[in-house]
Amino acid sequence: MARLIPLAAKESTAAQLLDMSVREFRAGVAAGHLPAGKDIGGEVRWDTGLLQRIITGELIDGNEEVRW
Image (cartoon, rainbow, N blue to C red; front, side, top):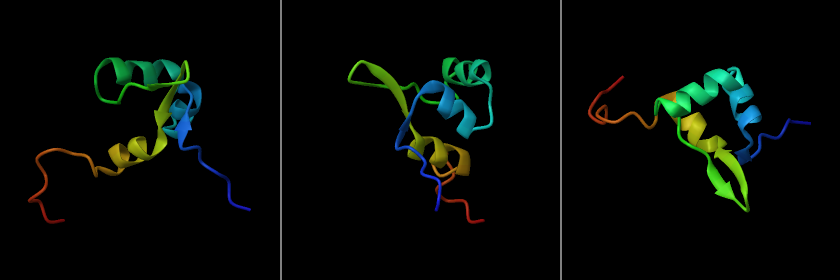
């Protein structure tokens, strides 16, 4: 059975998904390289789909005309 990836992840899980320590993840968020989490019912969670699109380069601004 396939392992499920959550739609929204707590900070430590989001860091694990990116193979980062929580400290590295927080630094990336603070520097603006990674998005801030969203408050969902008083708990902060990160959109795992958004993190995946960032890592794949899908959300890079200015490369719309680049053909790979």
